[in-house]
Image (cartoon, rainbow, N blue to C red; front, side, top):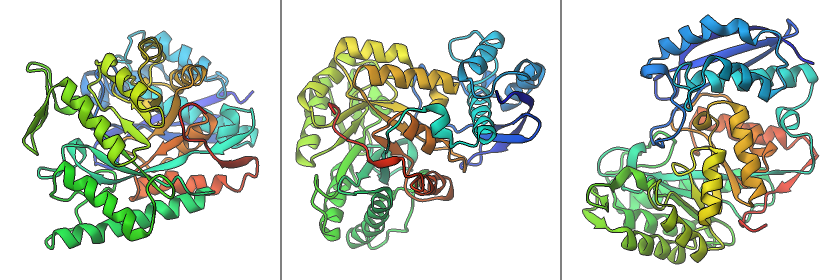
Length: 416
């Protein structure tokens, strides 16, 4: 077994310039793995806490006080690393040692183990073939928590290259769509300054309806047919504008308020009008009943829970019982450790819920989630479109195409 012989951690910075934790793991005194924890701007109530008391320094101190507990473990055994973490921190959300430490340590360990075993990381995590490439889910137009005032309330409009036969075609389709969208925005707003959000998406001063019209027009200008060559998706991030006191969705930037029934009707209309293949968090994170209505109404769309499920296997069981969600976001740092996330993936697969492996808005240049997406049989990988920290994941998918036992692209529909 690849035995952990040393572990070290440090405070570094993510793509937003915020402090985070990076961990190095060495196995057998010569195989080095490294991972850096990301962070999100739009977070669910139940996801792992990045740092104790929101202080990276406390996470680092907690790690350093306990790092000897990881020496001697089998780096390829995610459960062993998880058990060691839980011997230190028994809280439900890693509030003592920090989810950032749990993330970075658990992924650095398997990174080192894969190098020791001389196999790609995805194969270490899941030795069973066949493997498929996830479709890249590209954030092309952003608003909400990822962009500034004047942009849409809806957090993300996304491109899915459904007509692509391989990963290279898929990436080229998304890059072309993103590039052409800039020209469409310029034709509407001659003063557009090419502003982009955290994930590389364009951030124009338009409302929600105009944003979707821009996406539709971009497809036309590219010569793409919606639903055949490319499909659109939306991350509503509805919890971010849910007014719990008044029981309305407050689209403040557009000056519209919708009650729950109107929100369901709005989401259904967008799915129909724009042939959406993907709808993330169309209602707030506690409304499983409304999510169930949307899931049943739209069987050809991945109606996806992010804030609702927070990469938690227990929440998947709750969603299944309610009939909510045909898709589920997998963010390792939401769960804390890689073992937590892989258990979540198993629960999704068992219940025929499509997995979407995702980055966070505050990212590193690590490419591990490309391997995690392949290992978990993810239908989609959500990485953004442009920016070094986003391209790192996409380029890793290109490199993985050299492994001829990854055969073609995933099947997108929730029921296959």
